Image (cartoon, rainbow, N blue to C red; front, side):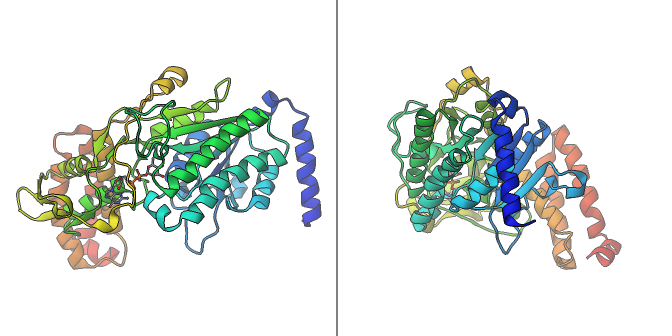
Amino acid sequence: MSTSVSSNIVSTNILKVLSLSPEEYRKRKVALISGITGQDGSYLTEFLLEKGYTVHGIIRRSSSFNTGRIEHLYRDSHEGPKMILHYGDLTDSTNLVHIISKVLPTEIYNLGAQSHVKVSFDMAEYTGNVDALGTLRLLDAIRTCGLTRHVRFYQASTSELYGKVVETPQSETTPFYPRSPYGVAKLYAYWIVINYREAYNMFACNGILFNHESPRRGRTFVTRKISRAVAEISLGKQECLWLGNIDAKRDWGHAKDYIEGMWLMLQQDSPDDFVLATGETHTVKEYVDKAFSVIGRTIIWEGEGEELVGREKDTGIIRVRVDPKYFRPTEVELLLGNPAKANKLLGWKRKVDFDSLVKEMVLADIEAIVLSVREPSSNELILDDLHVKLSTTLSMVFSGNEEMFEKQKVFKEIITPNFTDAGVESRV
Ligand SMILES: C[C@H]1O[C@H](OP(=O)(O)OP(=O)(O)OC[C@H]2O[C@@H](n3cnc4c(=O)[nH]c(N)nc43)[C@H](O)[C@@H]2O)[C@@H](O)[C@@H](O)C1=O
């Protein structure tokens, strides 16, 4: 199809939908997600598909695969796909206009960002371009397509806006004091959403989300870095974990719970901004302690500052050390959110508590390692050694827990054939 014919179809489509009332238009249930390949994007896609939406996602072109988290949702186009991916980028306005005019979404979730706080100090301009101006570009693309009255817009705002906090706990009325190029870029995005809401009467909301984690969290974020390391340590594949500021306090919830909150914001009668948080705060050190306790080990802390070490009680082995390279030029020391407004107006409440979150992440990482030993590249010796350590770890982790006991059986079924002589011969 030539470009001009395709453009004509796009404009005809827009004209058709503009004749619908916003209520009629919204009945189509079409979502567009930037950042669909990330942790939140993947959970949100599952959630919306379940609710009967057609989900479109914007993905950046990359020479390596970046769709691992949503691969399981992809169906062949001949089966009538419900998730459709488009190449695009928050730095490319023309492309955003084209995607929106083609997709004609009823809801847009702007989850795309350079989201790593430490990296934002190294890539400050890029972070501003994507996180701040990218939000403006999306909002303007909606206007360019004439869809301001039709589309509802969710902005992934963040507790990093509070930065050097001026009050605790932080709520929707707490003043902001961002402490990184990431936080500053998100501050622009927060205000441009409010400005477009007021200036053009758009249904646009900020979800001020505190840290939310899961087994799908990227491995450079501290919770996942720890859960992965603890899993590796339990299987004898790693000896020590190096961290930065382990006294930092965060309000950590489960990403799956927060996804529902995002959607709820767009289902209200009028647009507003909401904090989603657990109302609990924990230090990075507490996360480490809890993660090690999942594999039945206790960490004893010794020393201070950069000399601080975490020693395993039973063996005396140093399992945690501090590396200043992970420190940030300006740090956010404490975050603790007050989700009362979301509780009251959205009926939203987190379901997964801190202990369950840490446990799920550590177990998922153990599982991922177990499954990876099935790769043909593994060799017999490694498998043999791992089998002994794995059996010990599994018994400790799963003892006394009915639900986990079932999982242990599944793990054992998966790995056992790999470790028998015949299994190693035939499978590895
Ligand atoms: C809500 C907010 O949540 C996230 O931002 P973050 O809080 O910076 O997340 P993080 O897991 O990178 O750090 C948490 C804390 O842990 C400290 N920390 C210690 N040692 C290491 C360490 O080794 N690595 C990392 N990454 N952090 C460490 C670090 O200094 C910080 O105090 C993003 O999703 C962001 O997009 C967002 O919006």
